[in-house]
Image (tube, rainbow, N blue to C red):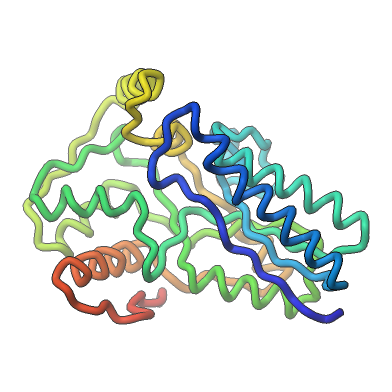
Length: 274
């Protein structure tokens, strides 16, 4: 009865799916898989679950920084599949389960490159790196190690029936984040600002033609201030993120290069924040 279950499994936004296939791609794992987990817990008499969803349930930025009370309006099937699991959690809480929900920003950690591999290839080839918009807006990651610590602290706090944002502290502007990465890589790439509205309309058209370069859930908010307020986790769980966005991104690039060079990247290579 005291057993804990932690669920951080998900179908992610990579590889990119065409519009018609997105529901069938995300929902069987993200929603139906969560149903299976919770029903198995119920049969086993295990009442405690820590479940990770996503900040993409929020959709467009209405207020910044975003607290856990920010309006919910997912922009696609990925965010919707995760929001449906939160509604499912509310139902099972009423039936006696304890379910702590975490809404992370983009998770970075060993073995987790995803869409970043496209960015790293451009930098490796010394090609221009286009930004959606001016690059003045901040971009926030979260380390998988900070996610693990949040999950542990939720258990330690008795698995509160609450939702918590997870993100780094003091995220830098996109322009600085990418500029530092280019210098770290020793690349000659330059940053290329673009008119955000024009790029997004072009990507909309490509998506409509079933030739997506990015998922709409990624590019539609790329030039917005999507910053999560993570103070609730500190107040209620004692959770404070330890990893800086710059260090996480540089470590991910180093892992990417190590894989290309045939070397084993050191686990836990991320440097914690000072």
